[in-house]
Length: 158
Image (cartoon, rainbow, N blue to C red; front, side, top):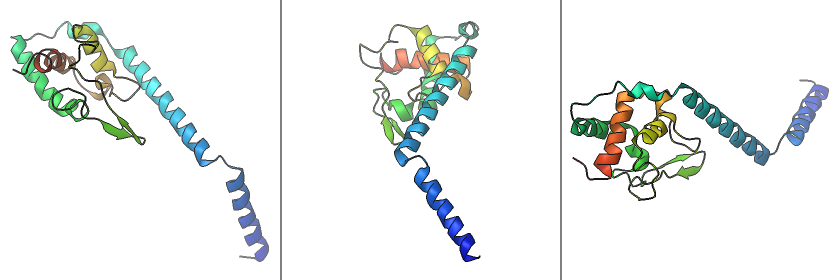
């Protein structure tokens, strides 16, 4: 490579690196893009949620719903919410440890709201809870895990 070309190349590298966004700016932009993507996915989940999809879910007995829900909980929820649903799980995402709420407190908003809990499980949250309805959990499994959380974990596992 000719010395003039080498100087031009080095000068260009220096110019672009000096004029580009800082690491802090790149991280802020990446965080903003993640937040926008999470909000977009949440909006998609809200758009496809249909409460009537649960109208056809029938159980022979509530105990069978709780038992199925325990299985669903173990592979879909336990990692984050903990074995007992006390929020002791969690995971690291983009450097932050996300801690889900405990299902066991009196302040938990879905303790007496089965339909609201099914909606929350289906739609997820922008702050880290998966959008299980978009991830492939069927209404029957969402209903089952809602039964398990409300009746199995809160009132004692069967």
